[in-house]
Image (cartoon, rainbow, N blue to C red; front, side, top):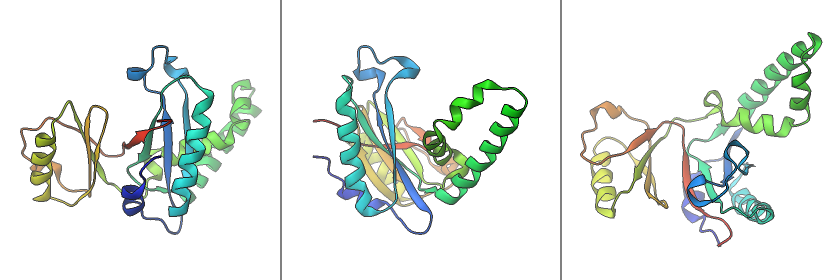
Amino acid sequence: MVDLAPFVEYCEFGGDRVYLLLAIARSKENENPGGADAPAIRKVVESEADLERKTAELAHATTRFEERFRLYLTVNARDALDATFALRRSMDDWIEARLHGDEGVRAKFKRVDSEFKSALQSDGCRDETNFLFDLDDATAADRDQLRSQLDGHTTVSLVRETPNGYHLVTEPFDYNRLETDVAYELKTDGLVFVSYLGE
């Protein structure tokens, strides 16, 4: 059972704000991950009540595969209305390409749902600009040190242990002023680790 309580507290729904939950089979944990063909399944989360249901749907969907899956949530909420207009612009381009003889765009019309999720996940459709500090091969002391230093600059909204370290999610700030000895990778629109699925 996945503990979703921290994410219920973290996520802010309302209006056209949604999040994406992603089940991803990472090559680090799978012998034959299939590269670009590795399974990745996305679900749109529209409300707090949706979190548990969509997580259960992803857990069920991953049972069809032999791979081990990680569950992630988009750090930033997405704007579903912006994604709708982005998809409509793309579809106009597909129609024009099709009229000019491009047969390759036919496949896009068969996977509109997937194309909408891709539009949602794009930078242009994020509804906020939270930061994700990704600490690989880090200790709890590293996490605590970085969190203490971040507290002097911003609000730390979420801290998650990952298979390789920690994720710290913060509100946006001028990260050029941050001085720390802790090694991290900063992502301005990343995915925060939720849990493994099927365990």
